Image 1 (cartoon, rainbow, N blue to C red):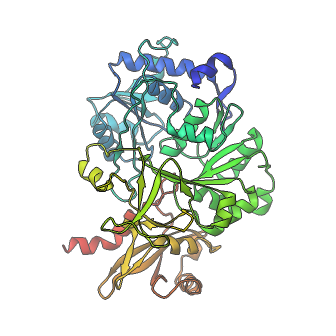
Image 2 (image 1 turned 180 degrees about the vertical axis):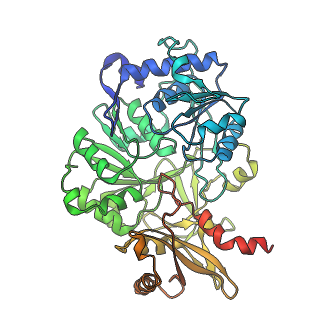
Image 3 (image 1 turned 90 degrees about the horizontal axis):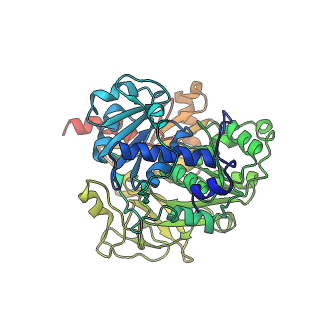
Length: 511
C-alpha cells in the first residue's frame, strides 16, 4: 500500500478534497507532484537523512511535499504557520534544514530571508522578494520516480506549551522500503478500519503530528482526505454532509464549538455517514464527550499519545460509557504509574505516567531533556500525571508542570477547567497557580467569556459561587480574571505557560 499504488490502479480517485474550495487532487496528480518535488529536492543536493522544512497553511501542496520527503529518505519538518520569526529561525537551524518552503500568504514570510540566507528558500503560492518560486522550479522536473527511492519520515516539534519546542527525530526505517506502513497507518487500518473506501475529514492544521500522520495514513491506504483550510464548526458539519465522511479526527475544542452551535444549525446537517469520530490532543471534559456521543452516536474513539510516539492508549465509546473520563488501555505498549522516586504505584493512586515498549525516541540536540524522559528501566514519560484503575484503564490528571501546590496540597487544574467550560457563558478557561505569600500558590481562573460584555466583577462573583457548588474549598479559584482569547494552539492545546508567566513575572524579576 502506498499512494503510488493507487495512482496506478485508481488514478482518477480523489486523494484530497479541499473542504471549503472543493479543489480535488487525484492519486495520479499527487503521485506526479510528489515525484517532481522529489527530483527537485535531489537536484538541490538533499540526500537521505537531510531535512526539508515547510511553513505553510493547509494547502494541497502540503501532501505533495510530505510524500516527496517520504520517498526521498528525508526528514519532513512541518513548522506552524503561526510561529514568530525567531521561532522559525530556531527550528530551521535546530533541525539542520537545507531547504525551507514558506507560504507567500503568511505574514512573516517576507522577513525571513534576512536571517536564513544560508538556506535554499522557496515561496509557495506567490512571488516573495528573496525567495525562489517553488512552483516555477518544480514544474520543470520529471514526473517519474527518482532512481534512489528510500523511506523518509516526519521530524516534528512539540507545541511548546510548557517551554521551547523540541524536535523529535525518529529513526528512519532500516530497510528503506517506501511502501512499509508506519505505526500510525497500522493503527488506522487495524483499529480504526481505514481502507480504500474511507473518506476522512481533517479539520486541523497539518503542521501538527496527528492531522499530518493520520491524513497520510488514509492516503497510504487508498482513502480520501477532506482537508479544511481552517476550522469552522458549521463548515465542518457541512463537509461531513456534503462528502459522506466516514472517519474524522478532532480535539475537544472542536467538540465544544460544535456543541455551542444553535440546535437549528446542527440539525441542518446529516452526520450519519460517520463510522468513527477520533479525538485526542487534550483531555476531553466528561460532559462534552457525553454530549457528543448523544449526538454522533457511540462512534467516538479516543487515544492518548504524543508526538514522541513512545506509547498509546485507546478507548471506544462503549468502554468509555463504562469508564467515563478514561483515555483507555495500552496499545502496542505497557503503561505504568510511578512516584517521583520511580516506584510503581498500585491501581487508583496518582503518579507519573510511563510507557514501556520498543519505541525509543530522542529530543534533537537536547540530551538532557531526553535523559529526563527515560528512567533506569528504559521506560519513557511525556510528563503527564494520571492513574490506572483495577482493569488497566488510564485516567489522566494533568501535566505535572501545570500542577498547583497550595498550602502543601497538590491541585490539578484540568479538573477545575473541565467544570468551568460547562458554564454557558464561558467560551474557554485556564486555571493556573499564581504567587501567594501565605499558601505558596493560589488558584486563579482566567476566563474567555462567550460575550466580552460579561467580563465584569459581577460575573466573576457569580462564576465563583457557581464553581464552589462543585469544588472543594482548596480547589475553588480564589481569583477570576478575563481574557478576550486564550492562547491556544490550533490543535486545542493551551499555551498555559504564557498565561502563568504574566502572574509570575514580578517574582522572577525580584530574583
